[in-house]
Length: 462
Image (cartoon, rainbow, N blue to C red; front, side, top):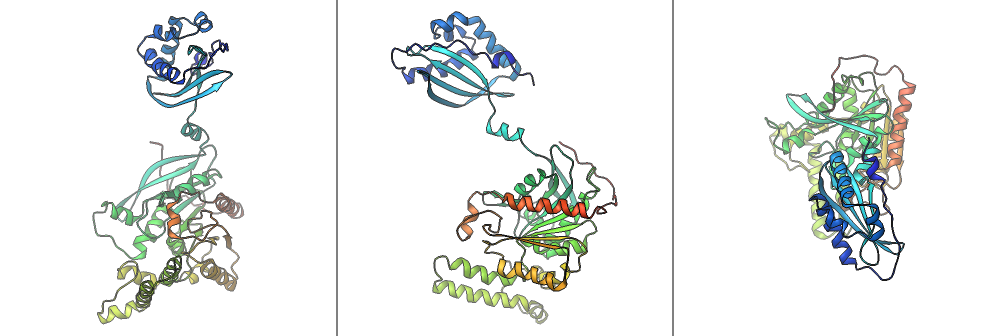
């Protein structure tokens, strides 16, 4: 972009005669006032503050012309972002970052000992945001897909400067999650999607059905069995991915987190559009079995009180009732349930047997787990997946555990507790790299994946 080639690199003569110290407040006032003079066409007022050497080289008319050239090319001055004061070779330096309509400039004035302008600079400047944009490795496009008459807002993330090698569909954990799987200040799915793009891997993330219900965006009552909460919408997203123009021949991988990972085998079993699954922090045991374990762990942080012991006992009764729920319903009895008091949800999970399903899948599987995860145990759940795989002599299952990572795959040194989720962190780059390399390797080893074209949907930048 031809952006003020002449203006940007004009560096006027700077004098360094030093007889006394500058008055900082006076110099700052002149620097701030100078922008008003320039904007109001009062270059004479600025000229009067030049020292002798600068005034000989730069007239008021030239000063006005320079400012007009700047604003004609990058628009009007919008605001002054920052002001920085420092010293350079005996002169006082006052920097101001100027935001124009189309770009930014750093505007620097150097003041001599008499508080006169001994140097004036207009310097190219990129904000941190602009710098990030220039090195961004992905493009994001908003779109939506429809399932059960419900429109699901979604984002397609694609590599910026390379062809896509695969596409992943990100499936949320429990609760009403948005498309980024926002947990505290952390956007787990957004980070995963953006980082995978650097490896040439595209992704789709979408608002969960329960999130749409929470936002009042469903016209009918939310169906709460696990198929409607998780499975069916993930299948619809995978089907949609198989029809996206330019991506239709790529392998499609379900990447589930937590509850989404637990249900990944069911999604793969029921979908003809899924070529592989990746399970992040997936429980192998029934969901209700994890609840007591989590209660004890969290309460142990400060020592378990008598009141908390009573709560644990009450929760044990609710968990036991989940396992006999069908019997209670047949008898017309109503029982208290853990987490959510919804019989459809718990009944649908009671019928789910992921350990049996996963070994019958004719596709590659990657199971990843953080050792610091207190919600899903590496010693119980991760090892149970592994032992189940060994018993079935499955050759297509890969297992990776990470010592310092928690349930969100964010690194830390201490034990993980719920309050950690309120701290901003980064999803492990090592985990992302391992995931990306696994995806690329299975595509290279299974070159016949996704050869069937199922029709085309065009996704374009808005």
